Length: 221
Image (cartoon, rainbow, N blue to C red; front, side, top):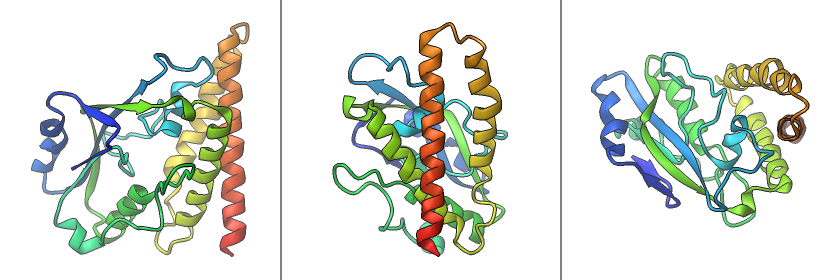
């Protein structure tokens, strides 16, 4: 089981996280990650749909019968025997040092599990809950754009790995949710200033992620 050093687990977290492993098909489990704003409150312009930017469970996260494509790095557990079958986490991915927005080692691990153990399950267990500290330095437009750009670069990289042809299906589902659900709903109540701010943040995140993805495809050729 893995827990970030800036996260605090609820009572019963570990028991809830490992409970699904009674099913031998379960390869990995991820729990719910709730943002703990160091400043005391969520920024008015940051919607729950963008919680992934700060490493937390987000609204619109693709979940089907509690099954997900990949775990959240802050709150996850793997069946130990899998590491000998699929290898360890990739050292070329993930956050390295201050100011670097790297991500993706847990996604790559889960995709390898899917490839080498296609009948395995990766589940979301919301009762395994942790609070994840979010400092003010991550609540800026600059961070949102940088983190989104880096996410796009990462998606371009994993999409080129042989055997991962459907690796972006979760992102496609999430993008449809944003374009045809979240944004229209907020535009219908455009008289609310915070709603317009959230639309702007979602739009900026989409564009930065898309630009990073396109650039990633270019440099990987």
